[in-house]
Length: 115
Length: 144
Image (cartoon, rainbow over all chains, first blue to last red):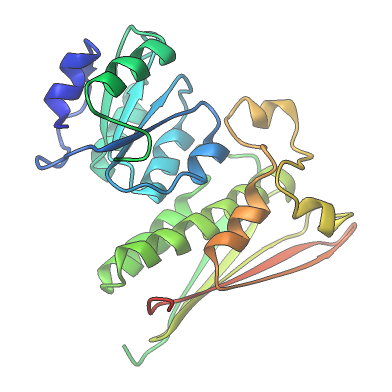
């Protein structure tokens, strides 16, 4: 699923502009615990999280995760947005809570295991 | 790649803004060297977990990284309190991280097991009151 479609499905706002144009997300991980994210090893994956700190960006950098969705209307500070831009990671903010955002993406074709 | 690339980094204590900077640098070097993405990812995760551990538990520390044609070796050392029961610390879910670290999304007791999972060789040298050294080796060719 392309970034614009992800954003449309969860009524999100894309906060970055320097992300890879050919992103095609196939799997997702929803977690507030970065330790859990580090144990997730699917390719072409995105992260949904309610946690906002620079380590979310760092963790995704290490995990090759190219899209982060901040749920429940949370918005990162400018420094985090700049950090994500530098690493080519797209940030989206949505008002949906984690469960609803995950569910909407799931029924639209993004499954946890990337089937 | 005949030469050995050596890099040293300081890991600042209790600075979560900078935590991961060393791992991010090594990740870039490995990528620039053309190492395959799955191996870059394994080395990055193993080093990042060890770096985070040094920030959380070790009052910061140092990272010494050597990359040659066949492997990357990463030595993360700290002068923190050491690990009292290494066998217990290697178990998934066991953690001594304080609440403020858990609020940052870490401290689930997956650090050391995850380092082991993503490295080809992992050695831990620790002594209570003296500190901990984690030595990680990741081979740069695909495992068969």
